[in-house]
Length: 172
Image (cartoon, rainbow, N blue to C red; front, side, top):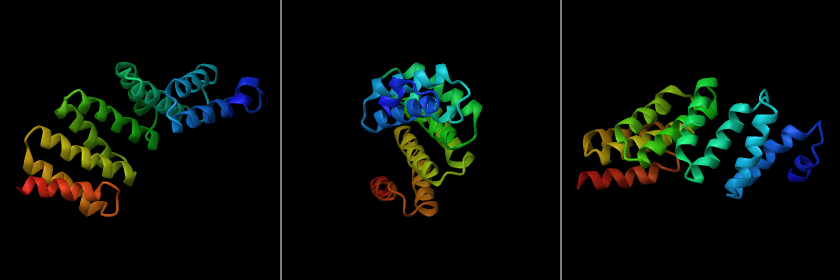
């Protein structure tokens, strides 16, 4: 993809930039991912997967600790679409706020994902993180409720075992 992008083959250029950005992200090469997604969005602002590319750009920025820039782009994604990229972006906004110890604000973002988007994987992750927010705030009853909701609604999710462990910790 990088070769096609570098050659700027008109028919494939935008798609090559998108795929090169995604591949770089999968390889955790965040500067390259950022560069590809940034070039794509600047040169092809009406690209059909612009919200996904914007999410990729924000993730690359977040992974490079450029959190304020990432937050602004994640917010833009949630403003322009209600698709899965918006659910992921809202979740990541919550993650950044959690990292900044803004637990009440993060909790609002996680509940928005858990009940506002129809994507089971992101809903389950949001219920888990919502529980962690409540634990950080010493709101153990609310934390238990969030973990229990994850287990009831998404018992096969990858975070189910961790939610079960957290519930056991909260009972002690």
